[in-house]
Image (cartoon, rainbow, N blue to C red; front, top):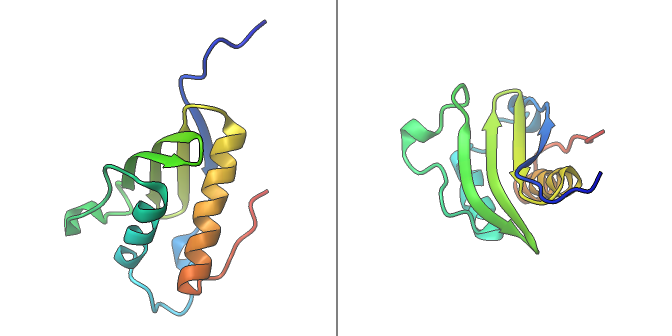
Length: 113
């Protein structure tokens, strides 16, 4: 069998947001601008209503190198990222977002297995 196209490739990570921000010093809203700037998302949380972790913080239509990011959604307890290329790309990009956010804001970094 030959793969002709990848309509959407998703990588899901189970991450407790509160475990990252153990000191409680950073607002979730402070993390949005650096993610948007680095990955060029065209849609992202902007209003206070958009910061509901039960519904998910939704980022749409971004770019990481040569990979197109269809969506990034962050929940309390999980986050997922969809690309239009491969699950390996999705995993790598999601790991990069996690690592750069942790470094920038002094969060505890978690391992992706």
